[in-house]
Each structure stands twice: as structure tokens, then as C-alpha cells.
Length: 252
Image (cartoon, rainbow, N blue to C red; front, side, top):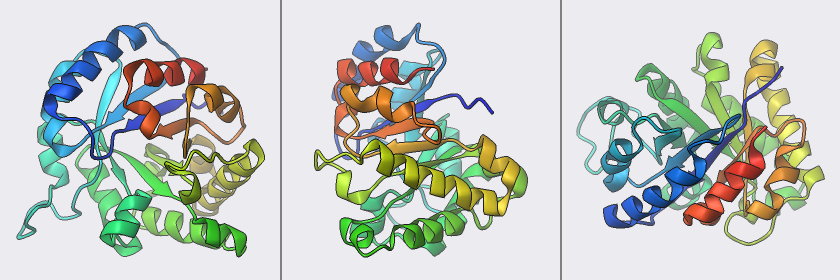
């Protein structure tokens, strides 16, 4: 099955509205004619509205970096899926390792967040990944299976392929280390196998991104691997020229 590559840039906690406007004005001319690939920027809550407005009619989608599983309630400081949909946000990143490790996000919460996002009309990038210690201890597959199965546990079978799964080895995020092509392919193939255990047809259609020190120089090699269908880009997505080069390198 042919799967359209999908490259998303995760800005994390960077860029004011002014910074974001400068970025998007530089990016759009560089990717406006790029075909054969989907492109998204995953931006802080404060820049969502501005980026949605500035990208209307373009190829660039706008994703949030988190959301609460409930539609509303007494959850000070949180943002719900309907609130994101109301802004015309396209999707949301869920389960990033920084949310899990620094802010205590649990598999149980993600089991509720993923279907809540889909029900609100949002696309989902569901993150999974292991630490270096877990990989060294031979626990990579156990960790990935738990995260993927939990995140998809309440997703209807017909919507499984709508979830993009991002494999990010935690030891490669922001460290300059990159998984070897063999390591990346092995992990992403395992993730696809986990999805196949839930629904074989969905496993063929689901797109799996690789994330972890992705740069223009390594994108083409990574996305040429049979089970990698895109990239979730961190630091290299903060510069429009760098991010555009990754998009160009990743297109089919």
C-alpha cells in the first residue's frame, strides 16, 4: 500500500506570535509547490490562532502539542479538543516523551485522549519511544507495545489508520544521536506489527514517523526505509530553510 509521507515540525516551547509569523512567512514560499508529502507544524497554544490564519489555503497544517481528554470541566490550565477544533486546528500531538516524563502523562490518559481528539475532528500523532536504559535492557519492544496498545485501545477499528504513530527513541531526542537505519526500521516495523495485532488492514495503512535528531542530511535515508512514512522533527524545524529542506528530502 502506498502511504503518503508526513513530516511534522514540533516547535516545543519556542516562538512568540511574532517569531511564528516570521517563520511562516519564510516557510510558505519554500513548500508551496512541494507535492507528494504532507506537512505540519506543531506549535504552542499561544500561536495556534495566528498560525491557522497565516496558513489558510496553504499545504501546511497546524497541530497543537497537547490537549485534555475531557471536553470541558474544572481543569485549570488545560485545553480541550473542542477548543482546538473551534480554532480550525488540524490535529494534535499526544504522548510525547517530554509530556510523559516531565509532566506525568499516563497511558491511561492517552487511552482517553486519542479517541477524544478523533471524535472532535482532529488528526492525531501518537508518540512512543524507549529510553537508552530500556533499550540496553532489552525492554524496547515491551515499552513500545504498551504505549501503542494503550493509546489505540479505545479507538474504533475504522479509525485506527487515522492515527499517525511517531516512534521517537528518547535517547535520540535533542541529543544529536540518531538511530541507525537498522534500529529505526526495526522499531517502526515492530510498531506496525503491534497495530497488525489489533487490525491487519489498519497496519498496512497507518503511517509511522521517525523522530529524534532528524536533519536534512539524514531524512531521505530514513524515509526510504519500508516502515517509515515520515518524520517528527524537533530542533531542525525551528528554522524555515532547514525544515523546508527536510520536507523536500522526504517527499515521495
